Amino acid sequence: MLAVYAKSADPSEPLNALELGERPEPEVPDGWTTVSVRAASLNHHDLWSLRGVGLPEERLPMILGCDAAGIDTDGNEVVVHAVISSDDWRGDETLDPGRSLLSERFQGTFAERVAVPRRNLVPKPEGMSFAQAACMPTAWLTAYRMLFVTGDLAPGQTVLVQGSTGGIASAAIMLGSAAGLRVWVTGRSEDKRERALGLGAAAAFESGARLPERVDAVIESVGEATWAHSLRAVKPGGKVIVTGATSGPNPPAELPRVFFLQLRIIGSTMGSRDELLQLMRFCGERGIEPEIDRVLPLADAREGFAAMAAGEIVGKIVFELG
Ligand SMILES: NC(=O)c1ccc[n+]([C@@H]2O[C@H](COP(=O)([O-])OP(=O)(O)OC[C@H]3O[C@@H](n4cnc5c(N)ncnc54)[C@H](OP(=O)(O)O)[C@@H]3O)[C@@H](O)[C@H]2O)c1
Image (tube, rainbow, N blue to C red; front, side, top):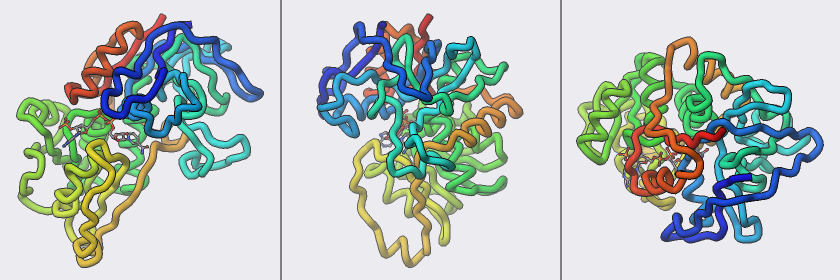
């Protein structure tokens, strides 16, 4: 079957490790099933995999992709929850120390078919297209959990989203503003800041800009480039909810600021299967449609990877099959 996969790792030029070609049909262990993929969305995770982060050489070649929407073997339209927990794990899958994401230990979704545990399938909402549904399981679910579960934010509060148009940033803007939060963003260009305002942000600032007032919480996925600004932006007792480190994993600790202002730094990863269902219900009830930068045939996946690596996307990139 046709698939997009990592054939090697290249820490500095990730696209050199990207391959499009034939891969074997998925193996289906007990309790697992196969999904015919209709749409799969690209995440920064896929670029990390090509760089060799979280994907050691002995697991290569590995089909990339965490997110998918498609048709199961009974003909149902389904969305795939990307967090694969241990067989005997019950409850919040993100807390299982043995969990992985599709494409880390098990082959990913950028293929005609993907094998997944049966319990990882959820029904695709009728009003959602396959392309829209394929945006949900990673970036959108992560943003949902950061805002409403780990972040526990309430309507009327002000949240700063670091980054304006990436997958998590666009999702946090749209979900947060729909839930009655005042969403501020930082963006690296005038154009991106404009686009963020169009997605529902109440205000958009240059990266690192001094804000009119301190915020209740920060949605942080950028890392080194924005960390010091995030800690300066949040009010005493406020929260910095962190899920990623796109620009680097070792920001200045700024410990005096953390203890003196009693800041709460909260780690957040993906979301549970139940939260995926809640997210899709929320989108349906509020009429939220994920911002999609472009939809490409899987055969043109390299174009999407290149755009993400260059930081030239607004929302999500989706690959369509079938
Ligand atoms: N822990 C988890 O469960 C989890 C889940 C999903 C993602 N993540 C991580 O979160 C990060 C974002 O993922 P994504 O899929 O949203 O990526 P993405 O779509 O590629 O978006 C990247 C975002 O980072 C911003 N950015 C990048 N470099 C920057 C810099 N030097 N200064 C300021 N802003 C910068 C961009 O801002 P502009 O909009 O201004 O260009 C953009 O909004 C990745 O590192 C990913 O691995 C973690």
